Length: 77
Image 1: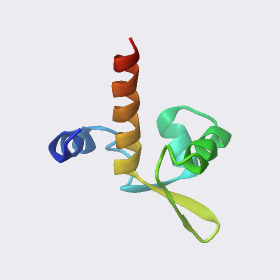
Image 2 (image 1 turned 90 degrees about the vertical axis):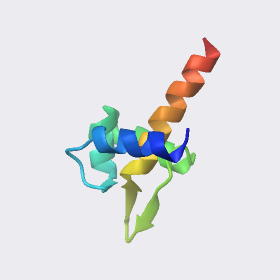
Image 3 (image 1 turned 45 degrees about the vertical axis):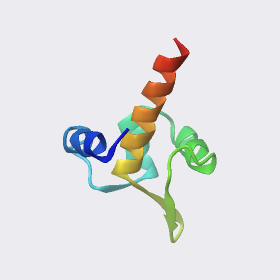
Image 4 (image 1 turned 180 degrees about the vertical axis):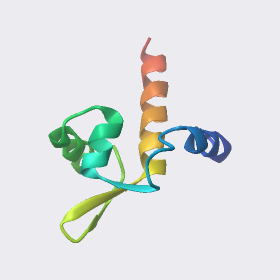
C-alpha cells in the first residue's frame, strides 16, 4: 500500500476519532475487547507508544493494520 492510499483512507475511516487514540477508543473502533487491544499492541501488530501508564495509538497505524489484514485475507483466499 502506498502513501496516497493510506491518506485517502485516513480522510474517510474513523473520522469521528482523534488522530491519536487510547486503548479504550481502539477497542470501540475495532469492536473488540480491551484485552485483545493489548494483545495486538504487545504482538506489535498495531504500532503504539506508551505515555505514562497508557498506550497511545496513532489512527494511521490502525488504518494500516486494517488494510494489511484485508490484503492478507484476500491473498489467503
